[in-house]
Length: 182
Image (tube, rainbow, N blue to C red; front, side):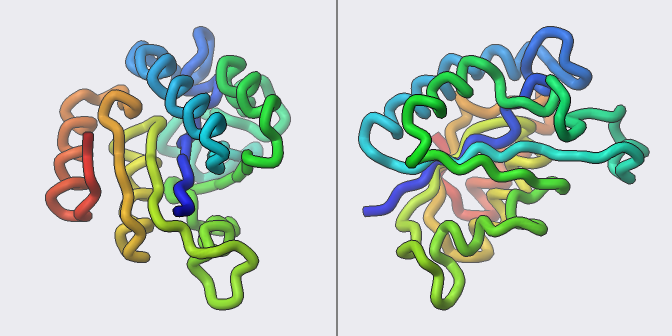
């Protein structure tokens, strides 16, 4: 069975103290996410780390302050996860994305074996953690649901700066998208 853990945007600008858009809830879920990554790698499974990636003048900066600029400290994966990824580089994919969905403008669909002729076999299950629940996690979950990929979202491994939106997104993932939410 091919199971892939997708870790959404656990980058310094969202999680680390001093990050442009960091918030306490992102720090709070980091130990859970670290455990999920360590367990997946120990089982020989693949882990995809999405990296929100922007250039100067990105139109998204009309909605949010400039963040995750390519090549900056804020763009980097947090050290707690970077260290784990370095131990098992063959099991890890760093996926730079410029929009909310990890599928938009990336090769994630091919990596998961969802395209005809893909090099890898079709993924059997995706596990999903990261930030922000109601933004990048939600839109990635929606794309997985549209592709009929069985997906398990971990509420203890997701966070948002908006608690109500976090709860609503988890409810929508379960009730509308059909994800298993634990």
